[in-house]
Length: 196
Image 1 (cartoon, rainbow, N blue to C red):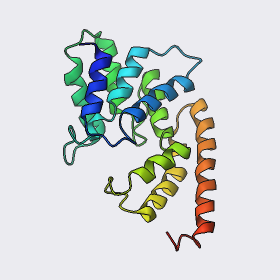
Image 2 (image 1 turned 135 degrees about the vertical axis):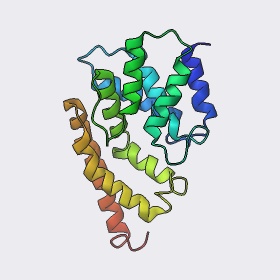
Image 3 (image 1 turned 90 degrees about the horizontal axis):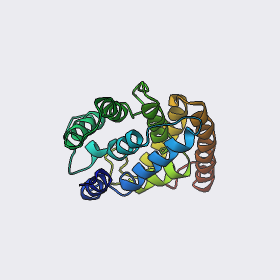
C-alpha cells in the first residue's frame, strides 16, 4: 500500500476529534514548510512525521497514562517498519514525532524543529481559538467555556516563548495578538467574564 494512502486511512479510522485530527496534521505540515522556505527539508520525513505526530492521542490508539508523543513514536515505528525507509530517515521521523510538543526541546533535524514550531503555532491565533472551543466537553481539561478561556490565556502567555525559529517567533507574536484581542472583547462583552 502507498504510505500516503495508509496514513490517510489511519488518521480517518482513528476516531480523532476533527479539530486535532487530519486537518490539524495537514496544517502542521504546510505551516512547517511555510516557516522554512530558506531550507530544503526532506518532504517525506516532514510529511510522515506531521501525519503521525499525534496518532497516540487518538481514541483508537491512546493508552491511559502514556504520553501521547511517546505512544505516537511507537505506533509510527510499527507502521513504518514495513516500508523500505533508510535508517537515517526513519530515525529523523521518529525523533520529530517524539519531540513535537512544546514541553520538549527541539530535535536535532530541521524537520523536527519546524514540525515542533508548526505544532505549537497551531495552538495560537484564530485557529487555536477555534480548536480550544471545539474541544469543550471532549477534552477533560476543557469541560466548559470558563476552562476554555483559562486555557487560551495560558497558551497565549506560554507558547510564544517555546518557539525556536525566527520565522516561527514572528508568526507567534501575530497569533498571540489575535488571541489577546479576542479575550479583551469577550471580557468587555461578559462583564469581566461573569456572564460566560
